[in-house]
Length: 405
Ligand code: BGC
Image (tube, rainbow, N blue to C red; front, side):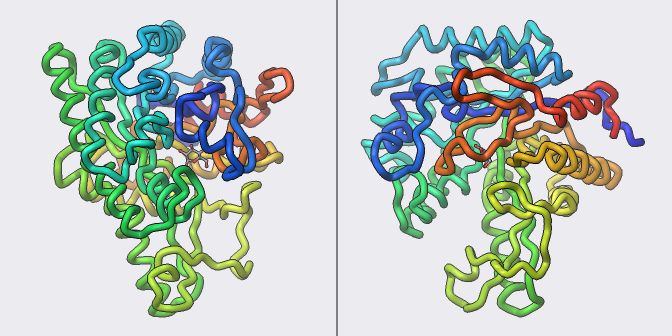
């Protein structure tokens, strides 16, 4: 038995578009109306209406923090037209969490943009970052007194690569040049947002906030020890895992490192072509691992390895997402337990860890994959929106209570 540190943050995450429902003013909703995506989000989990019920479940499961996102397109459905009623909605959400003893961890950008913003050119235009920064300024002024932990941008590289390189997410583009531009734009936006947030806390004489991004890190393991694979793994690690973090750290704009970790990427670069070096993964099953229902490799040790690598930053780390989509709830529990063991191992190795946030509190809309993948600790029946707590959630609740695994 190993104890986690005192005051450890224990919770689960959601994002607005994936759970709220009826986010009719964002670019995902717009894309869902065409033939580009296989399923539309519709009412999602009706979390916009049912949040208090969901947070009551989180409390019952001993969560002491909850990560969620504020939907920019609700707050500003058309340019400059801020909605006081929607701001009140999120004020109620934060108040409800706090009344239940649950620390709010607030994400300001989780993959979606207001339609008007994307119509102007979205993140592919540097000059448009000012709109996001105006939204950040507005929200942080409203909630500074209630919120300590902020995540400016969720998985910037997942967003830029899916939306601008792989063409899988709106706006569905396939351009390496634009991907690089969007990535840079997001980095600049974070750096400025970080400074805005800290400035507001200083002006209001509030204790320093904790501001970061949620970075998606993958365990890049090589399939065969060839030169191509070694170079490919080096590049992926450098560019995909650490480029963004390094850039933000040079600007001194991270108070902790938010890490989203899911599993292994088995590097198999068969040629020197840039696409192969950066993207090709092994499809032969010669190092078979257990998989989630989307076919992603389960690799708990990868979490330990990445955390040990991140130790060089000398900053605390928060696991902002870790989770599995599966119909097999025993496998879910094994996944969670094994990742917590690796987390414990990293803590033993000297990594400062602030907490562990499971993805996700409830089953939800998994972007271009639709509703089929079920990541939740809580099952959602999409016919009647009934919530049912899964056995894995109860086991995790015991860990959250005792603080040991
Ligand atoms: C994202 C979530 C997503 C999850 C599972 C992360 O990349 O932040 O929005 O649902 O992974 O794919």
